[in-house]
Length: 305
Image (cartoon, rainbow, N blue to C red; front, side):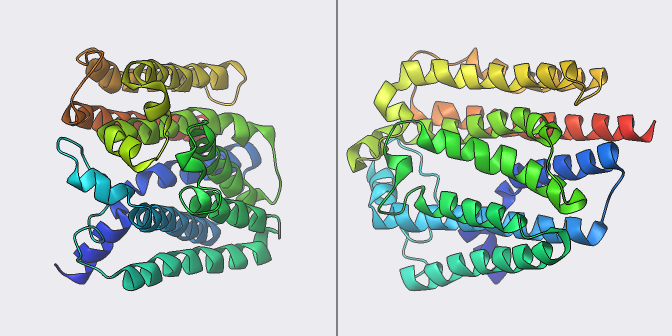
């Protein structure tokens, strides 16, 4: 494969939309509420945040490979592996993959350093906390993604919801506010839903490898209930945003985007083979992205009129 294909496969580049949406939301919020928009700072924020997200993807693959989790998923019949396959398939050496991984973090740190000069040093807290959340998700000694206590779900909610929305707002305005925190709730819950649902694809292999996700701890049936709760909570928070005046009333159009995952849930049984969850993953991603897009557009319209 060519270098670009290798890069996109190693980083799972096309997942960047889950970071793009909250960055756009925070930036649009700054423009609508405070009347500020700095294009160069927005681009730097976007590059830094997406690089941090790609680092998270890669460091998770790296440590899941070292911990034997990805190898277990690859060797388990009927399980769907969600890693890049470059390490388990022997396509890239561990050392080369590690260098690629840390280069993504380096880009994120450089962007964070530049942003701190123009927006304030507090932005470095976002960089530091984001790096620690990403690294210790599966890396020792914490490996909190292996503990089955809900730590990973809380981390995803913070790292893909509150932090990028509030952080991008801070970059533009140089100040903090509760409005971007409230605005982050729908995308935070729906991105957490997306990451939670991907555990259904290989939860039996996770169990064999000692990776205690909530799906492993609760079992498939209870985990499916919680998955639906996350979905409903995400869309309920859109209503909360409207009631609190953070979003205009016509942002309720975002509720339509719940159609895709709801349709898939209705087709699932209490117990399903791993491939049955692939459509749920796709529907969850569509819901997260499309809901965020509707929120951003309606908020921007409110600012323009």
